[in-house]
Length: 418
Image (cartoon, rainbow, N blue to C red):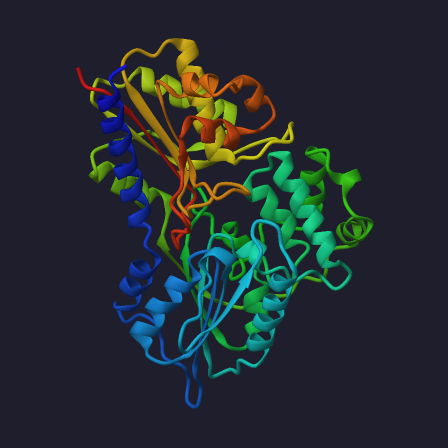
């Protein structure tokens, strides 16, 4: 095997991935929109209030302050991205599983919104991760109940739309709850999408837009996943109660300022061609799709993917959807005898894949052999959802640290030239 050639391919894959992450810079996205002068000023005697929520919250808030000047600003973000900042209140909370700090942060958000008068203008800066970071359980549900529902959904392989449909029906902030709490203040939301297709109802569980569906839809989704009988009793009772009386949704302006598709476009500008559609659904199916596309690549070509897959947990190992996707592609390529040198990187744009410090995996034609040389059985590790251990043994984990943004997942396959 040409080790120098493999190193070059891996470096190219990483450079293309990094270009996609850079294109999702949340500060640039917010500053660019605000520079257009479309944000209406507060009414007479009113003030502007900035509330930023999500993995990209801090950078979005920094850009807002740089443009608007000193303004009341509350930031709620994950622990990895939370650092003190002059002129802001920065709160850190748990992700992907909600915790007590998140519940306290949600109470602070609700308190500030309740103080917003009719003349005030609330600028909501929304990014992926906001759903778990702001748990505001309905009055008859505990934080422990919500955390257990979150855990069950994550382990079931449920897609983000299913997960957020359920979350919205258990929350006071999600599914438009933010706007209702702010009323009568005006709300403008700048949104960085981590959702394939950019459905604003799904991003961070849609705090500033109408909900995906009601309790009937949430019950149906949970039953279809076989989760209903495993839910806490309080959650079953809440979702089985009659729908609350419908009231008109207060108006809000929602603006999409960044997305997965824009990052894929940046990867194309960095020398790749775009796969015709996002990678979604079960990670095993996505790996098969990647391999089929790779087999059709011409020598020297790179193929860029966006999307977000799901993993159904059947084992007890450690990993995430991107690490498992990378490992599956490596093993499938070895099994199919993909000729020549190649490299494949799959990573989360936020720098974190599952409950690990890795963003994802960067594999090549030698990955399976390196895992075996370490005395491990890669197929057995995959069956145990232990992709992190397998990739660590191969030296194939991608560690970026927290990137400060979140536009779902990015991947790139590179084939060697002739």
